[in-house]
Image: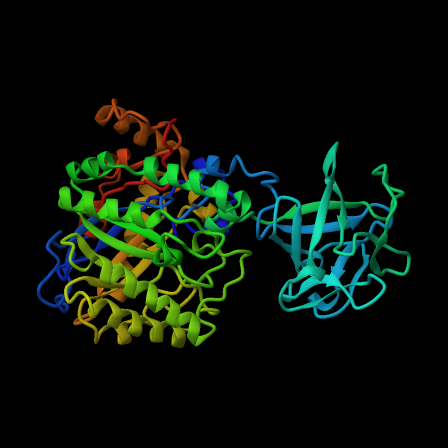
Length: 538
């Protein structure tokens, strides 16, 4: 992910993510308290190898650049009207008069009632935003709320939204969470004494609790702030200048120069599936990210850096989080052959476009598919087709295959072992676990030694694929952040345009060398960089 969106309830300063990218060479060493043990040799990539860099590669993930993650750069969303009601926002409506919640009976597929005094899953609806005041309501079962065939009775039966499933949320001028809901027939929804919900109320309101058309709206869960939410929230015309300014200023050539001069050898660049349709991607996305990726390759070539293209957001979304650009948290990738074929076409596009660049180091076919919805059968079928797509254009680039989150860490080994230049991507996080909040720096180091090195040993096998540590979560200990700031000031006092303090960037990489000594942990100099939580000043 950039960093996993499902657990972003921590304040930003406590969910700082170490974006550490490591492609382990055949000589990867495991670590114990006593000694390092050499790993067995594994298959080399097909010849010729990428022009640069050499293994082991040390790289930084340029998260939050070409795939939006709102927690990385919240100000991107500031100009959206009603920005608390974006696509995927989960809402509950309680009748001010009846004191009961609107509920999709059985989770959807039938009547919509107002007969429960406590809210749970059936009383929670996901918004599909049409404009700043007009929405579709998606029930827990996936059906959409709408007007029934007669008498304005509200039901949740439609499998796709149309005009009858369109509602306007009218907010009280002195309390934005006191609302009325106007249906497509022009009437307001009300909860009547029998428990039914009907759109037949045409009277004006004083917003009192005696008005059956007044509801108290509660927003629950973590709000999604991904590319879909940003583009659909602004609308295409307004989103285009916001994103293009972001792409042109968030990462610039000078960043690549700094990365190269600091001992890094590659960058990992997350992209979304819509980049293959640039400059005219499907709504609500806007064009321009492809030009930014072209610039990245130009800069990488200039400074002799490798590029790992990472398909971070697949069509249909391979996980329910914002960094996969899910509209409402629904995970639909891999459910149809057409969806898998579309994803392969994106890989084909990227591989063909950059195959001749000496900086094309690797193509990551997908970031963090989530089990069990992303099945192993669908994933390996896609990985085989995606691998072939890369090989049609590049015999040398590595092909990175992300393990399924919540899956068996070794499940891809038999499949990938037969593919030259295949790499397994594994992610390890501590930042999202409160257990680490009270750990000292040394305790975090000891945990990595004890736990992560053993897990890496399980996925690094004789004659098996290479291993790629695409992410490692930072220990959420605020005392550690001082060192980032300290080394930032020592090393780059004049880095114009960056906000230092508790929002950290690539400029803080000296932390690992000076404080954590990661080279002792896993046998390599794994650089601690974080472009994901850096913010550029205006």
